[in-house]
Amino acid sequence: MRIFNKNNKNGNIVILKQTKPNTCGGTDATIDTSAPKEIKSENMIFFDISSRVGYGDGYIKDFHAFAAKGDDGNFIYLETIKYIDNERNCSWALISDDIFSELNRLVLKYDIAKQNGYHSTTHGLPENFGGSVDIRYSSEERISISDNQSPVISGDACYEIVVIFNEYLNRERVDLPDISTLQKIRFLSTGKDSCVDATLTLNAEGTGTNKKTSNYGDDVFQSEKTVDKDTISAIKSAIENTGLLAWNNLPKNKLNSEDKTLTFIFEDGEEITVHYGVLAPSFISNGFFSIELELKTKN
Image 1 (spheres, rainbow, N blue to C red):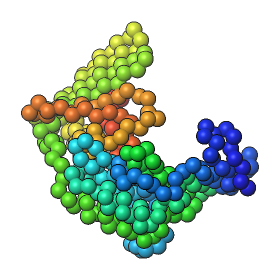
Image 2 (image 1 turned 60 degrees about the horizontal axis):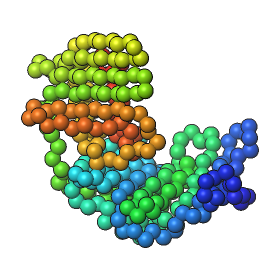
Image 3 (image 1 turned 180 degrees about the horizontal axis):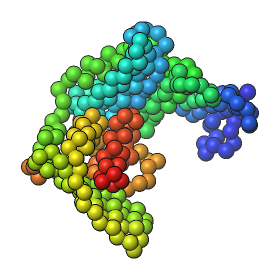
Image 4 (image 1 turned 135 degrees about the vertical axis):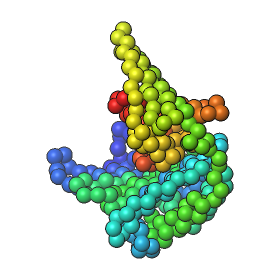
């Protein structure tokens, strides 16, 4: 079945398969006929591929590779899951070396754009057996593919991507402030009728003090609580594990409308402010929420 969807804004979305209403299971599949099958730009600025590995490297079952070009460096992330025991490994780095030249070469080598615009969802699957591709260029060209039933790229391409990212994760990293010199964290959330302003001061003995002011309309609430050592340690780990100090090199998620920030203040007076709602793998983007939860809700 090939039916042009008259409701889409550009008129180029063709329905290939469509699940009948109230039917359990089935597949919905579309193709954007305007999506280019050949990318003219060589200036890639964003790379995000996750996929089940169909063949090639029998050691890895799934992977997620992510790279974003920023003003201070290139933020890269690799997550792999092993076949044998489902062990998950996640690593990130902010590097100055240009990984995108290698990724450009790989996209051309495996002709990844050939399925550009194809999206398929099979309902009722117990897990994602396929994956997704989201690659963007400064020219505003884009490669977008998804299929939760079958791998979206070849096993050989999967293997080479993992090799490239592992190599660049071992390159020299851009310097970021030493987490041991962190003195304060400020969480600020502003809305139409509300505002939450919380500042966590790290104490010398390893605990913290969280002072919070919450405004909801005409109501103002203030509190001051001691935060235990384990929580402070967990917060520092979240900052390091999710690269929060490098988030300014990640693109904003245009679908996010919440105005929330975290500001990190160090002994030498340096301040780094990052915004909620960046385009990043869930493991990375959850870093903001975990700290917000401690400063805004739990303490």
